[in-house]
Amino acid sequence: MIAPPPVPHTDIAIVGAGFAGIGLAVRLQRSGRTDFTVFERASSVGGTWRDNTYPGVACDIPAHLYSLSFATNPEWSHVFAAGHEIRDYLERVTDEVRGCVRLNTPVLDMTWDEHRGLWMLTTPRGSHTARVLVLACGRLADPYIPVIDGLAGFTGEMFHSARWDHDVDLVGKRVAVVGSGASAVQLVPRVAELAEQVTVFQRSAPYVVPRADREYTDAERGLFAKDPQEIDRLRSQLFWAAEEGFAERAGDPTRTEAARERALTHLAASVADPRLRELLTPDYEVGCKRILISNDYYPAFERYGVNLVPSPIAAVDGGAAVGANGITHEVDVIVFATGFLAAEQPYAAHVRGRDETLAEHWAGGMRAYASTSVAGFPQMFVLDGPNAGLGHNSAVHMIESQIEFVMTALAAGRVLEVSPAAEKTWTERLDAAAEGTVWTAGGCESWYVDPRNGRLTLLWPGFAHAFRTALADATVLFSPAAGPDEAARVGDRAD
Image (spheres, rainbow, N blue to C red):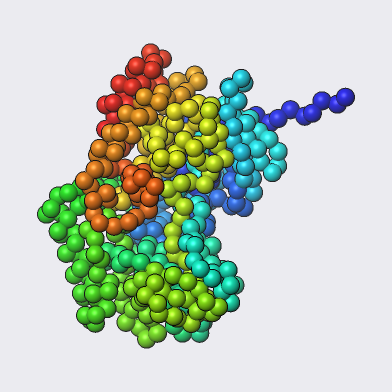
């Protein structure tokens, strides 16, 4: 009998090739670790910046801050980068580790083998084993489309903003945009330039502030290229300016009032019609949902043919979209700008640890020690996962903080697993920190909060620099002397 071929083994398996996965891969290679593999389900890298190609897609964090500190880019064209520019940047960063990236290779199952002390990975191209598993799947990877009566019978075209169908010509069409969040704010003005009619179904009005964008001059880009320290200085300025935004969300009345006034002044200056202004005025506290930046979203509603429906879409009847207010709108195209499956994380159902799946472990809301290590899942790390997001600063800073945590843990050189006590204490401290903040008491429903239990599971309820400090302190757990008691003590003091 011919023995089956050996299962390929990699020391570190990284699932996902967005900012987190590629960033970790580069750090590993530069540290001298070359036995790693990045598994990516799509045909190219880039994560959310590969998937989102809708008209007007751009980042709302300054480009020099929304990039890796160890892979800066002197050639950003604008203060805020367009989506395609960020994707091109990630492709260039990937060149350093291109040989370790496996495209078109979704990981269908990840199971911990207790006997062998390895992770077993199943893909359509075969099985693999790995000593360490890193989930870099991202929070904004799987689009959410609400359940709507009659949607399957819609006679026109429909798609999600993160799966934009560029074959659909919007010129002269009647387009319904479902949602009024970050994607809608960017795409509505662009769609309004093409379509005969745009109907925006608004479940709740967002707070919108001006977008202070401009093009970098040739002289500025030349200086960045000549002296990288100029980039470092700019990144520091941008970072600490963004940190001031946390005070608006943490209950500082003066800062909160200033933020609210800035947004409402922008609305008043942009929309002359008092009735329309009323419909576009949020009925919750500023910061409860993501504060959006745009100079052309509000003016788009004053264009002929652009209509605001102050209610969610309730049903579809043939070629018509019906609002919850009962009004019917004939449409040719429906665009869902409805966000992503953020709270439950679909990949979690495919990860089985010592006693349960990650989805089962997170049934009461996502949780992890240091937002990165999960009890019952040895040798596994989650990047950009529980409480690792921000509402006021750069997500890339958070990702880099987690990458540093993983690098420190790997340097310990032993089987790594956090205790349930450490995870529990960390989670309780975060829940306490979130209580009374605008995210839990601001009078809105947002994707930051798990609807199953009201816990703030997506955002870090603190300053971005505090996250990095907390994770650096949490790595004490991986010192050779640390045990279950030490783990609990470290988790108890991690705030």
